[in-house]
Image (cartoon, rainbow, N blue to C red):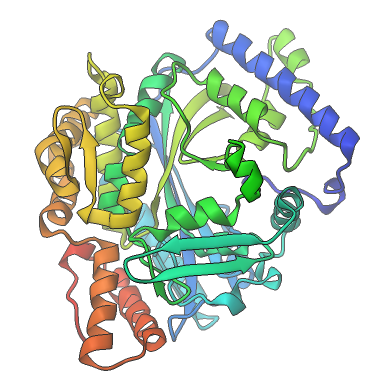
Length: 497
């Protein structure tokens, strides 16, 4: 959904939808012909990172200054997100080799420190946290959409399909949230990190299936979103929140089996074409804007089509692992976009999560007897929701082990595989050990961002007598300070104010 959409292009009628559907189907046909003709780039082993950011004021509360901050930064590496209190930072693609993680760390640290300094000029700062816990209902109003037409139009299109308020119902341990909102603005509570991995057409299915298989363990280790609207809910509440905040289905449509817009999927795949076909089959176009390209004519003339309708529609289907078609330097390529993890807590934590992901996907994709032939798809899906609910203490299903604690699965099985995968990428062994060591530290200590947030709020409530809102605000301020200091979250102390 990163494209800008002009206001003049946002008045859609039935004919627009018919034209878009026709173009979308033509794009799918062209895409499949390109696969058959072996036109895709194969030799570049690249990754990329997108990181979403919250802007907070000195009290730890959301600061509605993204437009001012972006204008001052004046860099295409930073873009808007849905809420006035959100930004997105994009890191240029890197070759997966050698000291890649050190290079990424330097770039991300430099960019985030600069953004933090610029935000400071407006009384704000940056925070890398899955759900900003100081957000309340007064912040989640239509007026706080970023002032770009595409966000309002996306909201309006989903709202028309739904025809009633969006319901948030999330049960935690002893606390629950039951609230309704007229817009999809609660989605802006969520900030995530997205890992991109460029793959060949022949390697796509193995990489995507591997990413699906490890989604649960990823979230268990990286959970960082335990509070929403003052309630202590899931360790990664962001998963349930995102699924519900943009759900266009009424109760009746859900009961009929209509697929949700935020989707894990329903089976392992054999190639990329079937995922894009599912997009056409199951999901109404939200932004039926027809582009100027005749993709069939471009391909027939020996050119490389950009497939604008296919890409636009794909950007409004929120798979936890999304297929991506793109063109760079005049060559088409495929990527897997991993979307399950929250932002933060620090740059080194983000890069540890990245090392775990890229290493595991490589190792699992290379196996002769891949895990998805031994793990039921329904178990992989359930692993994700167990991890979101219970975090690092979740029980995970895995072939050969049955159901075991996430920490045991990681230390005994997944970390060795991730190290093997990073070796196959030819990552510097010192970097492999540094970042996988952070993952091991979380797994053995049982502490990630969610656990730290919960422990810190519990301390402030029980030891100092703070009310829940004051404790959450104080925790958020301390979180931001520790996040700027940069030590991995499993080493953060609990206490103080």
